[in-house]
Amino acid sequence: MSTRKTLHAADVSAAFARVADAIAHRHRQTSPLVLLGIANGGIPVCQRLARELSAALGRPIDHGVLNVTFHRDDIGRHPIPKDVPETHIPIEIEGATVILVDDVLFSGRTVRAALEEVFSLGRPTRVELAVLVDRGNHRLPIAADYVGAHEATSPEERVRVRLDPADPSADIITITAP
Image (tube, rainbow, N blue to C red):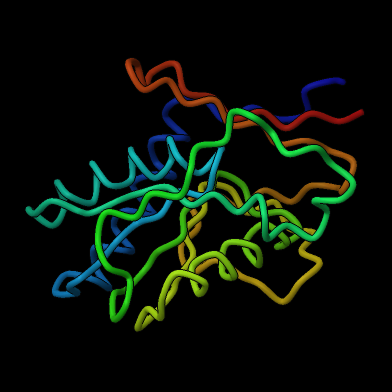
């Protein structure tokens, strides 16, 4: 695989800022509000976004983890990974505003599975989607409400997000072609 494009730490930081600012603008008064990182790639994005959003709003932001494994439509073709954390939602989602968070939006199938998991646990007032990278090529009619970076890709290309929780200056997003 050859690297076609690289987004370095400054670009990644700007992407986070765009998402956090947009959410803060829309949800300054929203309560209860919870961010749910879709396991696995959405978890570190969710954690950092919760910190940035908390700073922007001046209040703690509840955040948790959503395991969508058993709602995936390809579960029969792929083994269940052993290292996926369990769903953990720190507040009651009944009546809450839920923002699903993922690193990359591709086909939309993971988001569909996340919606099924959320609604199996309760009925939120509203569900939105925040992604760090929207790479296009959606196969389902799903669009993110908040996008850090739009990167047009071909279906064969891969988008890899690496976030360093200890050192954001090491963050990088790469797009590779076969």
